[in-house]
Amino acid sequence: IGLFLAGMGNLYSWQTTSAAHFILSRGMVGLGYGLFWMASQGFVLSNTSDQQKVRGLALLFAGIYAGNICGSSAGALLAERIGYPKVFLIGSIVVFLAGIYLLTFMKRVERRSMYATTEFARRFSLKTTLRYLTNPNVLGLIILSSIPSSLAVIGFLHYFSPIYLNRIGATQSGIGRIFMIYGICLVLVAPRVSKFIDASPNKKKFIVIGGVSGSLGLIIFQLF
Image (cartoon, rainbow, N blue to C red):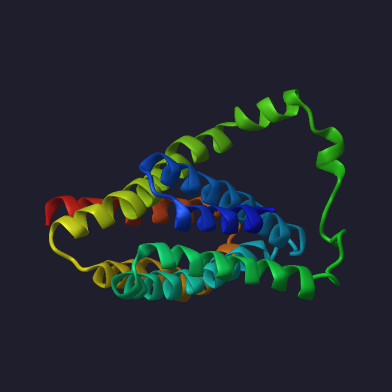
């Protein structure tokens, strides 16, 4: 469903002629991408043991951002040569091909994982959800880590950076190459770090290290 929505959203972007329709089309892509993103992570978590979950997610992100690197650079180069609308068309074709691959080659994957548990599902209620969300560790992680990092990635990297680079004279292909740096770090660094996180009894220190390094990146941008 997520891939279908993302593909249809790209087709909508290809045909749109106004800002309002373009915003709606990208919202459609975002909804599909969100469904796909959450389903992919859920699939990994339900098919890995407690000792493999971080590595499994790291490999998932590495795969996604390996494609992101190719897509960002290829899309930027193509946009300069054939125009933006046709790039959206190509993007929709790629997404639909991914959906066909998923339906064709993942039919044999068991619907019920050996690691999945229904215990939480049986106990799920508004009360348990509120208790979970008001847990100091969970609340701190959401407010002090998840929200700031999402603002940095979505607001700074994906929204502000392309506008800033365009205004200082960077070409579309140059912007695409700069975006590759983020993906390369995830592809090369994340899988190597994940084994240390899985093996560590205290994972909070890795959250702190990630937060500090991300903050330093923003501070360096402000200063230099």
